[in-house]
Image (tube, rainbow, N blue to C red; front, side, top):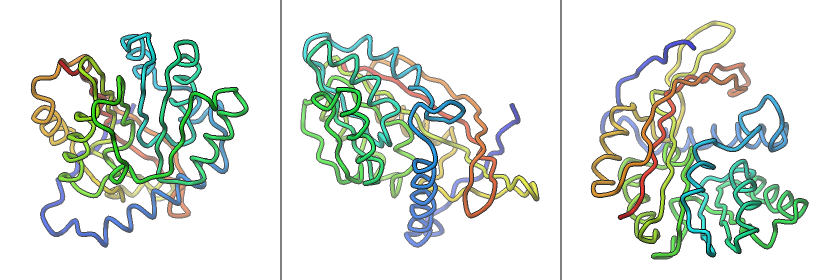
Length: 249
């Protein structure tokens, strides 16, 4: 695994809304194309299987009528495997994603797998989604927080997630930090066009402060390198993938 380059944090007004809109459009275009060209659980893709830590943490969720929220669920990489387990216990999972195409694919797959009575698929920006208070036993935000509009929006999102979590409930967060994109032809390193670029150090600082008093179940950073097609180029996407799991006490 090649080392991930670390970039300095953007400062103040330099990271303005025009740049956010550019990043949001780039991410939207990439994911629409990726979901169009690849099936959920397709071998050789990053949606070939559910996140292992996500599934391990599910074992800690109460067996009786568990309620799960999957923010930025995409086409159901985690939503569908969780739903298959919840079907046996009478629970339900709500999957939320910004992309209507992804939500429609999730609904279709849930019907095909006989899970449509367990899966509630909602098209919404995570920042705007109404999280009911004290409603959930397990909330996932995998590759979600780095796509919000600002650090303030991220902290507000976490606050709403916390308010929506029952005592004993679990959060599993994963986000891309220290992101760099390499042009595979020229080998030029570019600052990635991502909505909320954070260093792993800054992300840890924000999470540690916001989750003070919660029981930490898992904390890790793993370098990752993924081949992507973006900006009509072949791109090597490098990141330090941060995973943070906590339980409300």
